[in-house]
Image (tube, rainbow, N blue to C red; front, side):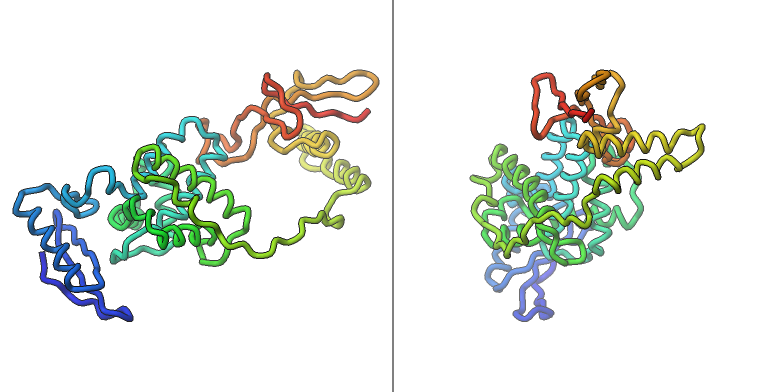
Length: 335
């Protein structure tokens, strides 16, 4: 434990309390000498009582306060553990993206902060995905993980409105600090909102802090279809003819591409539905309209997020228009 020191690098001087746990230095800054002295006295009392100190937060049990002192990072890991098994590959990707965005926002001013891209890589590729936590970590990643564990704020800090505003601002920004797309913000907010609902269930928060604050919205652009980028019938026929020339005849790449894009254009299928299409799904009468009963979709999610290690996940179809108890979506084919 060191004496109080003054940090004069900020506009207003702050007072630092510095101590060491298991060879690891920790510090807390306060605006006044009285507050810093009070915190230092609590640490000294914990030492006198022989309390164990946590090697991640640097705090004794009396100051950690049990579950109330759970860090936002610890909450995030608990939330992912609870949702991972039932989540689709796309949901896993979206969940880790959103939480990797906000974890670095809710941190204390701890020295040695790594570059933003290293912190994000540490979270997205090593710390958050359940199957990747035991992977061997390069030194820069291991160092970033240690920093995140030390710096992550207690969940209870989100009861302060200023912290909630910081969280919302972080949700709406890209890694370079520029504003993210509105759809990106909404997707991230939905994930973080659910994680904070989980915190309420664990009795870490009295209510969801995101319900208390609304994001200021700018003027929404008119959503109009640009006819210049919508394929017309002539272009569609030309595309389906052109793709038949891809690859050799024996490999049948061109014929598969023609069938794939034909399903997208004539049956209004999603790409994942066309990839999951089977002959048994098709009802093709000699005359009249045909019908396809889509039972499976194979969206591209990436090998990192699927249980099988394949680039495409396997999901049950859920139609936007026709929904059936048996979990299929019907698409109709023109005569």
